[in-house]
Every structure is written in structure tokens, then in C-alpha cells.
Image 1 (cartoon, rainbow, N blue to C red):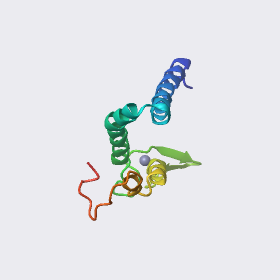
Image 2 (cartoon, rainbow, N blue to C red):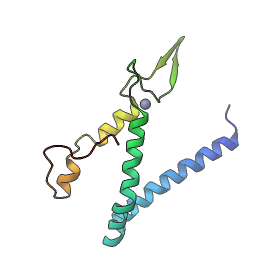
Image 3 (cartoon, rainbow, N blue to C red):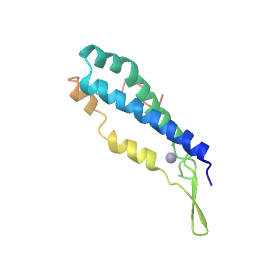
Image 4 (cartoon, helix red, strand yellow):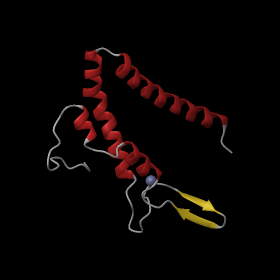
Length: 119
Ligand SMILES: [Zn+2]
């Protein structure tokens, strides 16, 4: 049983996260060119760091299960989340074409990666 205080705290947390995303979309959709450039300079690196952090946390362990996702009961069996877990699968669904970001910005795709993508 979860207390009403905890539910209220989670609701507030969720509201703040969605408010942030709504504001990002607002700037992208209705912001001036200067505002969109500032968004790209300041917030895009934050969002990239967030996704990198999630992917680092949701790596497979030695047994091939997600090291971060919890366990769940199925009947009498305690199951571990196989890797790739839902977080990795959903990230891949959205970011499935890594070169698209360069192409839509009119940049050439480098022949070999220049950055360590896991840092
Ligand atoms: Zn996971």
C-alpha cells in the first residue's frame, strides 16, 4: 500500500518531467531562432547525457539480463528482465537511425566514428 503522500510526490515528479518536455517542445515549435539555437546549445546536451546515462545503467550483466531493471514475479517464478530491456528497446525504436540527425541537419556522415559513443 502506497501512502497518499508518496503518490502526491510521484505525481509532482511526473508533472515536472512532463513540464520540462512540454517546454522543450514549445521552444522548438514556437520559439524564435535565437531561442531554438539556445535550446540546441544548452538542452540538447542535457538530453543526450540523459539517454547515455540510461543506456549505461541498462547494460547486460554476465548472465544476459539487464543490470538495472528489477525482478518480477510470474506465478511462483521470480524472473529477471532479459537484455535488451524495455528501456533499451524503446530508445532503439526512437534512435534507430543514428545518421539521420546529421542528414536532416545537412551534414555529411563521417566514415568512421570520431567519438567514443559510450562516454
Ligand atoms: Zn533495463
